[in-house]
Image 1 (cartoon, rainbow, N blue to C red):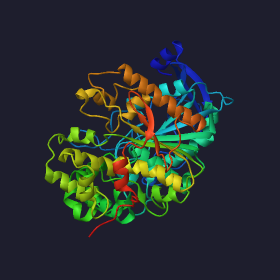
Image 2: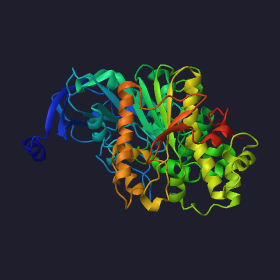
Image 3: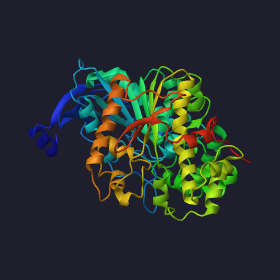
Length: 516
């Protein structure tokens, strides 16, 4: 035992020991909860296991002290070389879970919420400060699990000799770990809710469509579902470009010979130059990432919208929604806010608006909109708003139930210029106003009384849904289209984006094809 660990025990922070299928783990007592960090749910995906489906963890002897988050998966990071891993422990044990529980009593049988982080399928780490789940677990009196999954080349590149969607398979393995082990932490494996934002919401949508995930969760919350899903042909072509950037063939054998911390540089280089490949890759060339779930016909047989409309998740209760001004964040960060020309707007409308007459239809539907407003509107609709709405509508078509929301409360940081932007829901939900994206969207403002009230409402709604299937507002339906609008004065009303809904009615969000 180290000196630091001895001091923790002397201070009464050392928590109880829980026995998992692989061995015993000791947590820590924190703010009335017991927290376990860095528990392996699969073996390190390195060496002979590189680019393979996850395998069960090796058993260990004695008691493992689960005090620290596991290492982040290799990924693109800020900086000159855009490679390596974000701040966190070093090592190859990327596939770990973390558990916040009021009491690790097997008789408690509390509901369980499993968080899947976002990050454009190329970044993310469950140990990020913005994902500290203590308020969700404590306020909701339930068990919260967060997990790491492979991102970027390791998790989503479509390479020969490896299964597709390895990042999604990691998530399935973590849910299998929950099913087998969560009773020992005080959780009920029959009351599991998966929830995630952005790429995490795209992952939740994928899990709803994946046969391998069937039966592993009862409820799902998808916050800002991204529309892009790749066809197998497009994904293979993108992977070939990434491998070529590294001087390799797009095979597991070739890529496995490269240190996993070096490959993010190749993915970042291709991502930065995607616009030059628009004739081949289509609209994905104008997104922020060369990675997305792949409709490969096996791991992910069809898109989530197609699967849900066919009834694949009719027995899973669903909450889904989006933020009113999703794309504003990217315009602010990219420096385009207030600088969009009419030519820029025309190009975006031609690229993203649905149907051959989509550009004209958008201009007719929003006759007073400026070029910047049209540009932002069509990006928001294509990327997040309409995919989230259509997920709810597909669930209804398939015989299931869905609750819809829109976050309309504007972020106070930057004098309100961000609006109700992408990612604002995460610091509100977790109450982590000064961490990660929260430090930007609340910069200089802090947790105002309005923010604290909305934060509490989000946690109350999400945890009530995890417990009962009812988030506190009526289910969405084709006649009234009732939607919970989350604002300073929350209200249930007809879907606020009715104009956009009409423009996109009937669009199926198919897997993006390889062109040319």
